[in-house]
Amino acid sequence: MVKKKEKAEEPIHKVEEALSRTELIIEQNQKIIYIVVGAIVVLAIIFFGYKKLYLAPKEKEAESQMFMAEKYFEKDSINLALNGDGNYLGFLNIIDDYGMTRSGNLAKYYAGVCYLRLGEFENAIDYLEKFKGKDAVVSCMALGATGDAYMEIGQTDKALDCYLRAADHNKNEFSTPMFLMKAGLTYEHLGNYAEALKLYERIKNDFRKSFEFRSIDKYIARTKGFLGKE
Image (cartoon, rainbow, N blue to C red; front, side, top):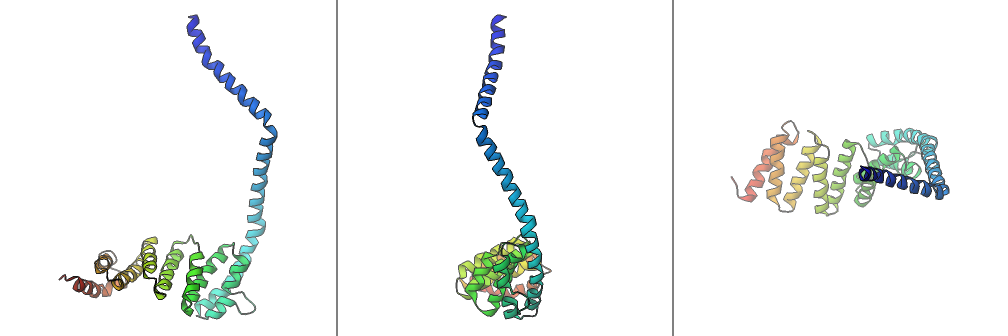
């Protein structure tokens, strides 16, 4: 019985020892612990203060400036959209002045598309790749636009990668078949008719309500002809 008691008391004794050592370590490092905890609290206050007192007002300013730039973009007044009209900022100024805001980030997408329309493809790629959007639709269109720019400068493999990623990024009846078609045409350009055929058949089978579906049989027949299929 005595041995059993000793065995039962041994783990309790070890736990007490461990607790004593922990208390000793805490006591010896009390100043460091206070400094670390204090630093975490200060950083949290700075972070939330930055978001609420600095970033939130900046976001409102950026949104009011973006409104006019977007209007010019819709009217295809590309230079005014990019550079502003003297009263309202253009996308480039918004990126410079409000780059940390959601609007500043979105302005990178718009700037990229503007440069694409102007035929300045490397500038288009630069801004489109800087855009980091959470919106599934805009992110998908940014990938597709980047693919168009790469295609224009002859970087076909990169264009193809963008089109394939855009097609699967936000699956729907509009953008998915559109980018599948672009990817298919790019495969044809590369002489890879088998992969092009797979994408065209995917449009035919999965996207019957799409615009691309209306003429897809022509592309299927063409690639089958290249492959020697009936």
